[in-house]
Image: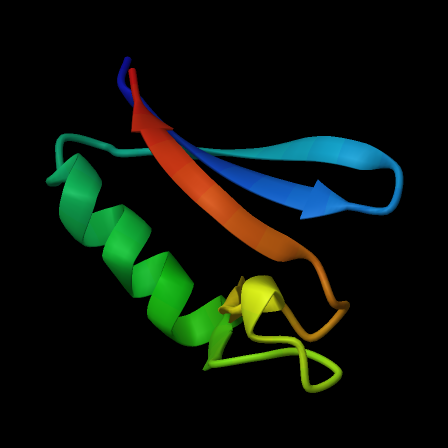
Length: 67
């Protein structure tokens, strides 16, 4: 079975969220998850080095892996 593994960086380290693809396109699932669960910020606390997609809990989206 194929999975999409979403990688988030939190204060406790890297967290993984595994989602079954159920035969669907891995990249489309990951993109849809990012659209629903994250918001892009051009900077955080006025620091442009901290730009990226963040969850409502403040976790930074690092990326995703299709396995």
